[in-house]
Image (cartoon, rainbow, N blue to C red):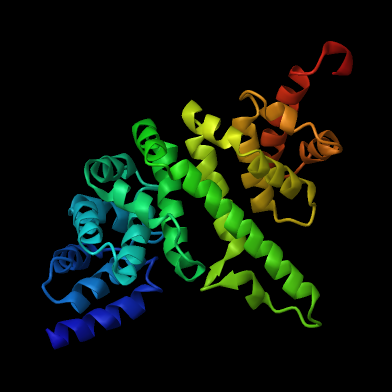
Length: 309
């Protein structure tokens, strides 16, 4: 066992740089088997290897799914749900294999049939900031599940995931605001201030908005989000700030485009200067931004009396 573990640690370290290497099927199959090891360190290290090997490598994703990796990872996460060193790489591996491959739907179907979703709904609530890598992994997986599967989307909404994502949005945007104040109070701006526990807060915010956008394809999620006037107003303010990144603008506008037709949401978006900002963004060189901005502007104007259009 000691020799096996030493080999696994070496593989884990090397696998950080192996996303371009193919013909890893036999290794993946063995690593999946080792998830069931009685030795805790062996299963943890195997999980880390699988997380790395499924990142950005379609061939490895397909092999992982075909060899029963989704079932094995779901089972281990549910058995050791309190161990972050198991759950975080496990959820990240599931995030990898539910995106950008033709077996993603098969992986999602397996996840839906397991108890994983209810465990994730508990895990994502009230986690402290020191658990941000875990939160980011879960939010990324939730986005993938919501984008692809209407059935999964409704299950997640019923589990209270929409409210949890709104809470993560508030906490993350507050964290970004606090860090901005820290930057302004020091002479030398350090890029490290953008990170907490290795997670870039802007990335987490974009991911959370994308997950909310995917959930909002269901009208029940739209209803929940529409109650959060503060959230939509914050998103509008982020669009108004020209210095924000292109990915953040895209994520904000994606959610607004999904929400704008629902009930009173268009009224919330009619703030002073927002139409002017949308007019600018319609001419963005980023196709997603220009498309979303055009959708939002069209619906807002459609809801106005004819003489004000």
